[in-house]
Image 1: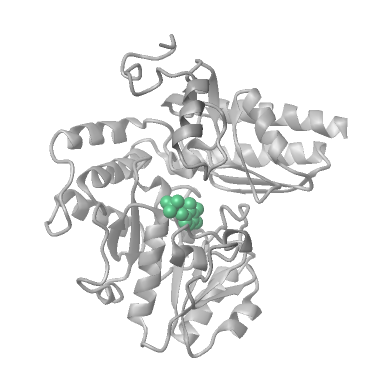
Image 2: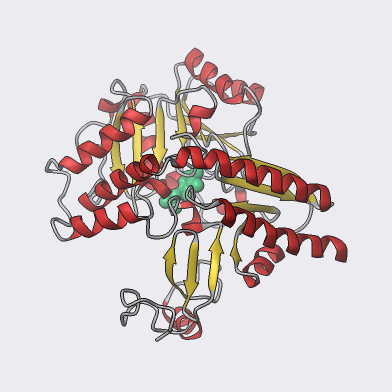
Length: 412
Ligand SMILES: *Cc1c(COP(=O)(O)O)cnc(C)c1O
């Protein structure tokens, strides 16, 4: 057993295998549909994580955006521990007070609607697609989505995702999605016809490369939706729950959606998802039309409540404002020093560095130096740091990245 583990992590099922032995298990028994680093992570605390060999990493991409409160956030851990000993699961044929309380907390912090709970982002978006069609007359079914967007991996959500690389070989896709260029209001107007029922968009594109919409774009979509009696759906699976420094991404842009989807960080690292919509639209998802067996289960609900409470207890929305200024400054300075950094994009704890060269080697080089980051779309370095990252950690990670990038700049 590795010497760095505490007693709770040192059980037979967690962390007693070397990274190499774990990789062997995967190569024999796990479907190879992910590109995985050859590292077995065994323990985490805040923005620090340790592998089976005891190497420590600073994590600027904790849980692929799910661990917005860092690894093992104390209130979430406590809520889950309590709940798991009390009642693990009850189906949605019963009332559960924690699901009701969680729905109220989300409603109070957003536009005052009602929640449907599920377990993931793609499921939340499937619910949104069904709801948009159910709420509209039978001949209206088309949904306008955006190039570079990402909505998930089930067929509806994949069909909504306007990125050809995710469609290769799995067709036919679900009919009814019309793709428009991100940021182009005229193209959206031209795409609307009598059969259109909704517009669906991420307020800031995440997987597409941390693309922040041009000034006025989301307001323009709201106006088009209102003029044509369309529903405006915001996929806030990545931007929601505090990520951008507001409770929800839409609150940056002075636009309110009719439907909002949430997942990733919603339960502080536990699996969960939700759709929020107004009390007028909600009844269109009528009994029997949609369901998720595990949706809003007591453990997810307690974790979801704890995540919201922790953001408030620790003033994390304010912390994000401070941290994002640090990242803006550090990365803008770095941009001046490295010719290959094309653009720095920072909104809260969503951070993208668009490069003119391949970003993959920087992910590897940073990992060797003990910093975990991501690269999306081939050339966008992406961080989704925890809201409770410390200022010292922010600087430490930026130091590592700067060193790695300046070396590459000098070598060019
Ligand atoms: C990650 C993501 C999804 C998919 O979420 P899953 O939980 O993996 O199904 C959908 N939309 C956006 C914007 C995402 O970032």
